[in-house]
Image 1: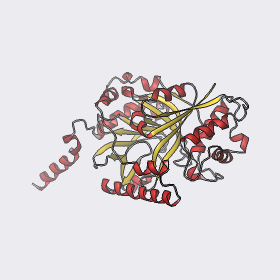
Image 2 (image 1 turned 90 degrees about the horizontal axis):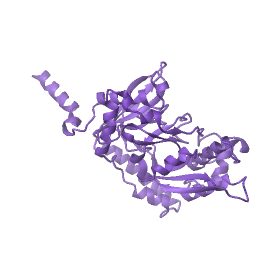
Image 3 (image 1 turned 135 degrees about the vertical axis):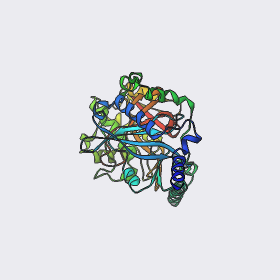
Image 4 (image 1 turned 180 degrees about the vertical axis):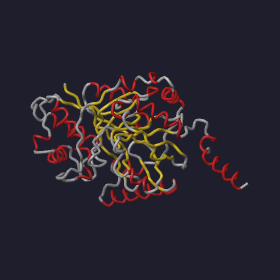
Length: 382
């Protein structure tokens, strides 16, 4: 009777999510979706030679399983890529994927026994349960607000963004079921968009904490601008880049000045104006470079068009959480790619100036999961 009781209690625990929610995706089904994705992704030539390994469950703010974290490892067991698969037919099947490792200390947090709470791009929390995850976030939020208030920044855009931010789970919709059907179909040629569409610009990643950077904690905006400028220089435009200033650190410091950045970061207007002024520097008195600003919601076509025209995009993502222990009101990254995945999910590929010295790969996120928290700046040449 004891053995029978243990069997049924274990079975009931394992089936907890699927018994309640008919849209729930089990780990085995998620692994099949990940395998299908890896074979058909833009990195399939490299990834298909590797081994898919399950690393961790992902959770929502109610401590329900919301996804699965897999890595792709080569024959030396080094991580060459990762895939985050959702646990619901009402969420995009592939929430995020990328080259190399996930980010900074994320794997260490998981190895220490913490649960992985995924709330969107750059919004990861690690804790032993949801209650403590929320408490961790609220503590970091209060500390950030206190620091801003002490520096006389109460009422500023940065203060208001931090104060008003509320943790929330990913929004669900039945529109994502098509993607699941394509990934789980035995006919792999149903997934055509991932391999036949999209574009990724060859933007070289720069690290905002490179030795010699004067204000590394607030240099994401200037570093993003420097990456964009270096890319334009590589295309043959008459713009100054790292080589004109003696290296990456010196160039980042210069852009810090151009963008009127301070220890709290770079505002959207300052980013756009500073980048355009820099790009126009060698063209004066004419000013052929200009900028356009967009909210994320509803403006994927403008983002896609920019990438198609070889225009890397400066993206400001609201709220950047370092595992929940600290947070910033925003973080700048470079949009370097667009793509359409299974079910025609729109993805954007980014290079992150932070997240560790060796975070040089491109990370891909679902646009509609993150667009409500984004503003982006496109520079163009007239």
